[in-house]
Amino acid sequence: MLPTPALEDHRGHCRCRACKLSAELCICGRLPRVEMPLRIVVIQHPREHHSQSNTGSLVHRVFSNSELRDYTEVMRDAAADVTGPWEPSTDYHVLFPRQGARVVAPGVLDRSRQSGTGPGSRSPARRRALVVLDARWRQARRMSHRVPGLGRFPFLTLPEELPAPALNLRRPAGAGQVSTAEAVARCLELLGHVDAARKLRESLELLVSRALFLRGKISRREFEHIERQRKKRETTGADGTTILVGEK
Ligand SMILES: [Zn+2]
Image (cartoon, rainbow, N blue to C red; front, side, top):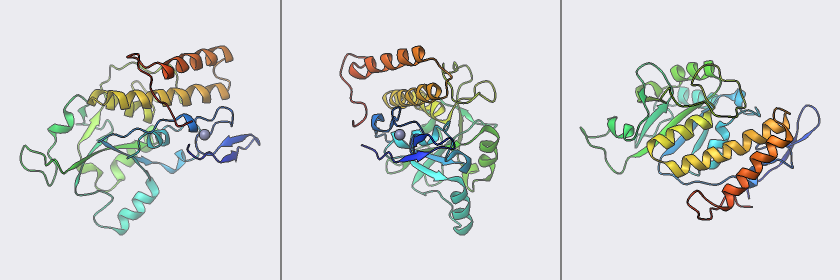
């Protein structure tokens, strides 16, 4: 089980340090650990560290080979090291909708030729990583320009027509803008990592419904309905097989 040390919030309530929920709603023991060949690198703005509405940390906790990097540290390390924070043996893609970004679709990662790859072919020894900027919208835009070396990687954007999720921890800043974890889940789904996307989305739903209940944004009745639906899914997978969720 993952450690869940307690933390007191400003009102004196006891909160889990990792998921920021109360002890009885803590999700830490219920999170799956998912292995995936595509590495996810979350660059997190320092303002997100202690935010209860942050979902970038959830991405890192669900995917075993992911990385959570602090934006300030990335900038400091990059200033000290001319090679920057990027591994030469990895092909990076950045999930952020800047101008010229390619729409995420099956095979989109194969269409990029990056430094170190031969013309039209990709060495099987090269690893792949998806970089995600975990911040409020305007901060993420600034980060996309400032992180050294990021601009030379291909940028990806999600299709605009995808529906908004039913529950959100933050009000979307604009149409098509979703949380970090939701964006990653959508991207993975479109890239064909359907099972990984489903596990992330289930973890996100668990976090969001419990956080909204804790804030009084959804009623106990709605909350209990969501919990019942989730338990049903946990015991019986979509294909009728039993799936393991969490280590509890
Ligand atoms: Zn917790």
